[in-house]
Length: 327
Image 1 (cartoon, helix red, strand yellow):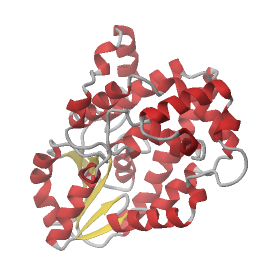
Image 2 (cartoon, helix red, strand yellow):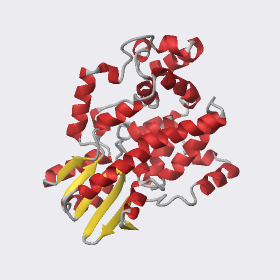
Image 3 (cartoon, one colour):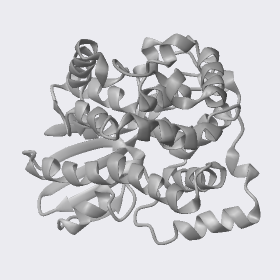
Image 4 (cartoon, helix red, strand yellow):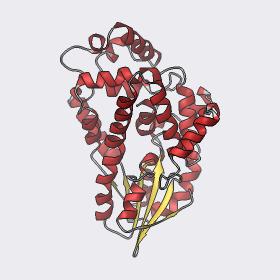
């Protein structure tokens, strides 16, 4: 599920896309593929837009799609959204900086959350040929093979989703979420988490290790030399406010390139969307509804906005009217 994990978890340093190069993968689509993707998302509600305004009575909820990676273009966008934040009763984001720090401290105390602490390592679980590929790609990203062998498959997959040309820095964490949170803090606006970030890790760890390894086998073909192109396309789709189109591209590539039979590939993709998007969206809406005040800003990963089970459609079902706002 590499393409999706990029959108959800990646940390991309400022200006790195230019350093890495990369091409827009949309330009490589055949007319048939382009038509298939367009048709697949034709009826998806709210498939475009990074800013929507939900209104019910006197209550206005500004829903912003974010990217958890830094990019210099975000500075101007943040300036344009500043009045929304400073005039809000509360800002809701997936996890505040304080809650993320608490999660990291917990992970430090509990290595089993992200490491294989007992039983065979990935060297023994994956098989010689596939492990050689993983070790090579890990080394290219500065991860020694012995360390990669001890990582839980989901954690290693996230690490391998980063192209080798990228280097993590403190500035890498300054994505749209953090920019908006910093603005709220400066303005004295309450910022709250929509969820405990540990719940996401617990969900990723829910499958037995052998099943995680099986899934990693199935996605190895999608972690390779095209990573810079993947990043370029992903970030470009965000600034075009078309992340749902990108996800449809990623889904098509995954199902074409995976080693799994088609029914298993469909099930694996749907399981990831259910766990990482749909279930979380449904849990967030009651939190949004329970937040006091008539001026609320919700800033979450852009992929949480579109779709039947997207945050926007769930708010519509809760009685809100929706209109697209400027981004």
